[in-house]
Image (cartoon, rainbow, N blue to C red; front, side, top):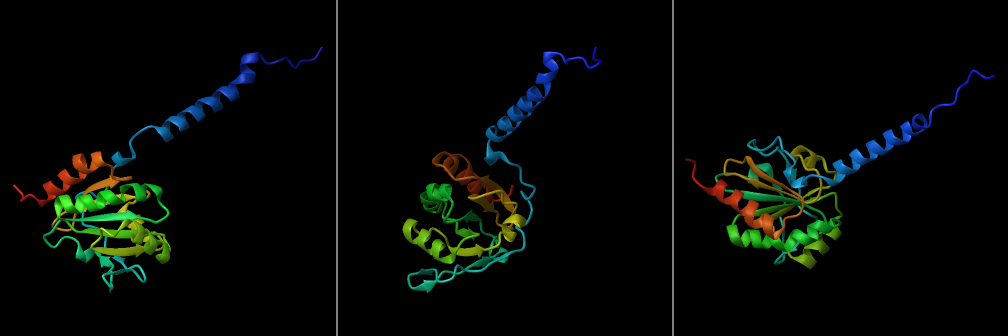
Length: 193
């Protein structure tokens, strides 16, 4: 007789059961949670030192639209910085809300065109409008890393001292505009007290 004994049936199924449990955990992690609630270590800290050169050939009323630098933010005024790209479908969805944000609050909105082609960025703004005071580029994505950007689009509210006071991950919706962004801007505008 052979000394090798047959494994019980449940032991043969153990690797399959372990794999299934791990797959379920990954699926729950990927589908659960609200990406807009991702924490940011930059809240309350000065904006990262960065320069965003202008989009080549981008014009408004016949004049070149400038890029911007971190030194342009703050200076006693509240501002918004929006990271976007022409290849980003959620950026198309949120784009009209940026103009509404500007109209509702009067704060300047600075756009950062992320890892994009200048011609595609110009077409995007030509098609959907340009709500931005200035539009800079981040062609290699390094500045976005400094800002803690997870993906496109992301929006930052910058306080009057040049500090990041709020971060919105993902596209702005009508609800997040009225319930989160506008209140964050109004709070940043309020005198300290």
